[in-house]
View 1 (cartoon, rainbow, N blue to C red):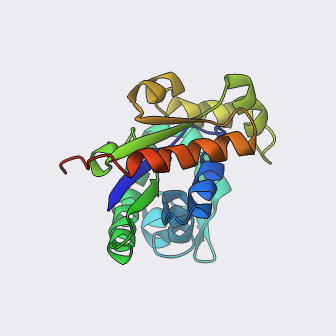
View 2: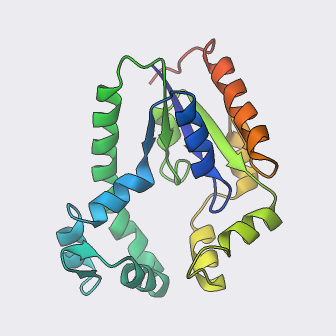
Length: 197
């Protein structure tokens, strides 16, 4: 199995690229989706214990948790210490379930920030020009300058991600252009050696 890491900064089109990999028959593990499931149950008690008042009805209130983290950015590390081990456990189950697949994609928004590239054979970074990124992000409900800056400040800059990437998907053009890049990446990895892990 060839493990392809997929990442990209906020609003760069990573989720769309993940969908294109899935369309090609590649199993995709979506770390964000796992976090959402954890917030709806398994991680709720631990998050409430760490950040009192950020849950309701057995689920994490994302608005309250987000507001708390913007006010107390040092608490991101405490949250990650709760959530990341659970996400990695889900990732291991995913890899075991797809052990026969020639290629799998690990869709990890904070891939470089959490040193997850060490678990991958190659990394794809999805990128778009800053004006395209900003337009996409501010089309989302509830997005503010403060929230945008809070999220981006915790992410490795796009230029650095591009330098470290094995492959780049330019999502600033058409969907067909991005799809063609995904297909080309899959052709390339079919002949690439796996990294020693």
